[in-house]
Image (cartoon, rainbow, N blue to C red; front, side, top):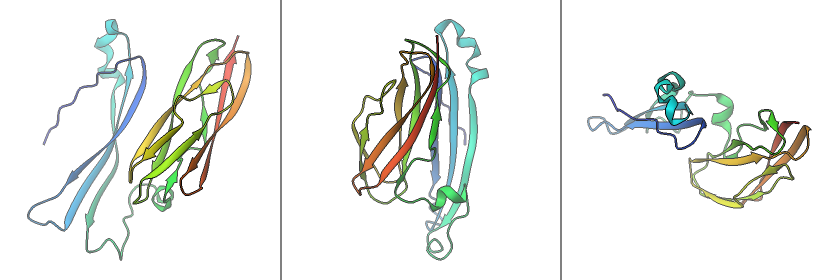
Length: 185
C-alpha cells in the first residue's frame, strides 16, 4: 500500500516527526504489527521550493510484530534495549548543544520528553536561566506519547554559555537536561 504525504513547513528550519503505522489483521486479531519511522525535512524559503525533495528523508526506525498472548512471557526485542527498559517519563537525551549563534539572534532546539508508562503525567517545566528561554510552564503528557519542548537560545554576550532545564513530574521525579551554546560577537 502506498500512502502519499506532503512536507509543507510553515517556517525555515529542520523538522523531524515520528510516525507509527499499525496493522490489526481481521483474520488473526491476536497479531498486531507496527512500523515506526521518522520523517525529516528542512524548511526553506518559498523561492527555493525546488530543493525540498533533496532535503527530505524517511528513516525506518523500528518494526514489530506482537502476539498479544505472548507479550507477557516474552518481551519484544526491537529498538534500543536501553530505551525499551525505560519506564515512566524520561528525557532520551541529557545534553542539547545549540548551533553557534550571534549575540542578539535566536536559535531554537526541541527538547524531547517521552512517557513510556500506561498513565498520563503532568510535567512542570522550570525555566532555565538566561540566555535560555521556554514559553511553556506545564504540560499533560499522555501515555505512550512524547513532547518536543521548544527551547530558545538568545545570547546577550559572546562566549560559551550553559544552563539547565529542570522538569518535575506529578510522581515527584525530577528530570535534568543540560543546555549549551556558543554566542558569537
